[in-house]
Image (cartoon, rainbow, N blue to C red):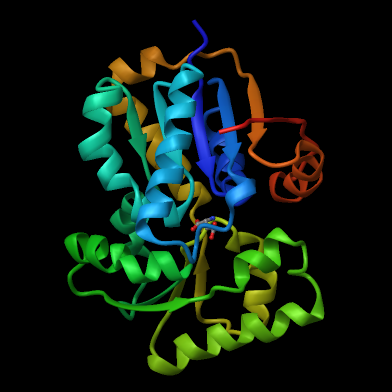
Length: 272
Ligand code: DGL
């Protein structure tokens, strides 16, 4: 039976996570859905992000996915818990939906010496306080500073992030967060779009500050999850196929997505 692992993002960002998952766990079937027609999610209300995300999760279940990864911090922050606690028991009690905030929070302590870290994210993720709450569970001694960078996703989605105009917005938010606390030694890219800004970000910060993206962390955490849950592992089909879907125009998606994914891909349209 075809039972792929679903990978979801509001747009293209989740492809940076999917790339790492495919490296680590190539044997499974995967389907990716980008809700590009309604992206970005970052400035939208809790209710809106929850409803959009739930609709997409239901679509994955309809395709036969037993397991869905929300490769989107905004959806993980604003929708995951409600879906896990309220919706899953009703719509698909044996299926699972996992996010990116918990696996990142679980290991973040091993990347900081000063115990002062900066979280760069969408406004929605910052306002949810999800990182502060999760990190505090595992590392109560870590001081968390947050900065919302609302222009960064639109810059990336519009492929303007390499242009000189992007520098203003990148530098501005890095300066904001670093001036709050001079001892920050780790910046977490807590949005799956931001790894595409990695080179630019490094231009504007001192060398001693590490910049962490989530792809590898999420891939390792998924591998660990499948090992600890053999009942789920056995349900995931293993023919090594990949399929890509977008709620917007597939031609636009193919072009832009290849930049995130690092190789050409063909997508299909989904009407939700
Ligand atoms: N990639 C999403 C995240 O990780 C955010 C993009 C958006 O604002 O839609 O938060």
